[in-house]
Length: 281
Image (cartoon, rainbow, N blue to C red; front, side):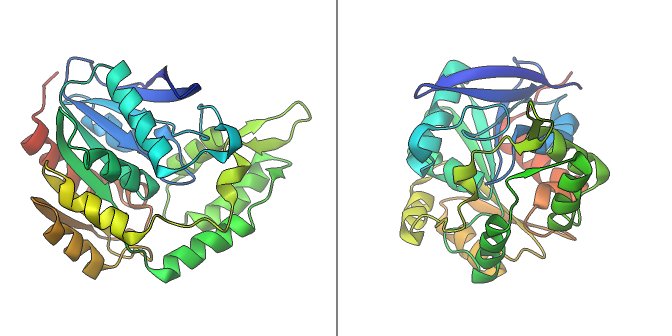
């Protein structure tokens, strides 16, 4: 099923939303990670579009969304954007699925026990992150070029960062991470402020407290080879939520959704059907 592009507004920004599935189906909001975009979820969304209305937000500063003034990329800003999406799309009963940074944002939104939130899926995101993964991300941010002369040059940079991604995922990355300027160079769609290697996650206790306040069922998804979320931390998360289960995705690192899309879909769809219900087309 083909995607459609829509927009919402939040705190003066125009934010791009990618949608799949009929609007009268149960809604699933998809939130990507630090350097991604809404279309990152497209293989999962296409597999689920006959049962759910899927809405993938290009979070502020990325994809087709506006850059935030003065580097306004705090968790509270992202949570406000989620609230704006829920309100403007008039979602009455819905689930949130968030990867990495998107998982942190989804968790903090869910901690407010919003009406209508039926399920939460946290994908390779945790209150306490493995120093190995943090060091890797900071190193990648620090050596990211400002632009590229050609798409092949961009692919030569991105490919080694996403070794398990298929050709389709890499092509989508090129389309939604880059745009060509008037001089023919390929510039990032991502606000340069986001490439700051000094990036610091939220204090762990903020996220642990948020977990304890979530009322809806949660699914904790971890890539079996993740260098960012340890199995021990994922187990603790499942224990701290009021009601939660765990899923380990084989042959996947931190980029779980693109590393093993079939196994990810097989783990997440039954949980959403159980907790949110599903329509049929």
